[in-house]
Image (cartoon, rainbow, N blue to C red):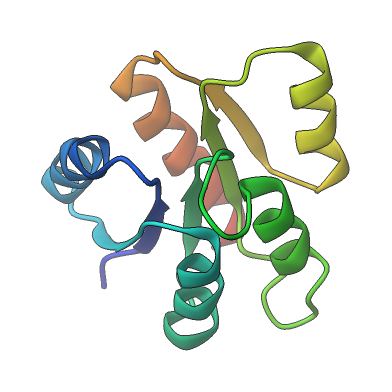
Length: 124
């Protein structure tokens, strides 16, 4: 069965582009466009991995990541923060909320695909 990836970003064109690339690698991709939708879909659909932007409406990616990682039921789901925020303080905050990886935009799509494979392999 294909691994389920929850892709969360408020830019629809970006989501569509990444979704197409991941589906070409045989991943099942679920999308969300804000923090609250991301939490709801995590609880409802239990993805195998989450790709999460930080600058989101309603709840930011740090808050979403923290809420998932500190939840006994969902805390083991790997989370990749994929963001334009590239300051050391941003990365530090990513570590504090227990993100499994931190990739900055612009990025090489192959880097994202490789990171997903590593994180999913580590969980199986």
